[in-house]
Length: 235
Image (cartoon, rainbow, N blue to C red; front, side, top):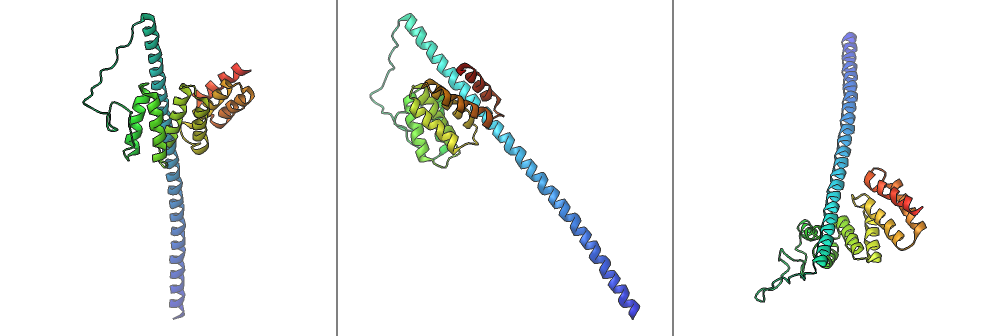
């Protein structure tokens, strides 16, 4: 009887030890998988950020190209001294917010992505700048939690900067930097604040902001390079 009890105890001890070893191994596997998943999620986040930056740079390049084309048209028109033929308007139709050819009378539809894409189309084409400012102002009020808030405020800064409204432009760029520091538009918004300060004769403040661009956004090599060039000019 004693031998049977002893054998049973040994069997239980063996099973318990094996189970503990198995549990420990399982925990290690789960931990390793969790770490791997975290790494994948970080890689996905990094890739998404890079895509956002590239998309933003493409929009900026398109906008600048549109501005250049418009300036060239104005120069050619002045050289030819030919008045621009007025657009033909129809008295039988009225402008509506749903008109896909104008921002006049535009109002939010309730879909932030649709509305953002509609407004940005005019911005990138260099058309109806004042109307685009009004439209984006309505956009940021209508969609306070939209993922396009950073972009909308950035473009409000750009459009006002192009209109030489430096105080308004600085306000919108500062909104991006303060409220959306991790967005793809934050580094350029901070850089533009530096340019505005330089334009306003605030040389030392401009230099401090440009230094902040370099230290805060070292991965954005394009903006860092521009900030360094501007710093050299301000020396």
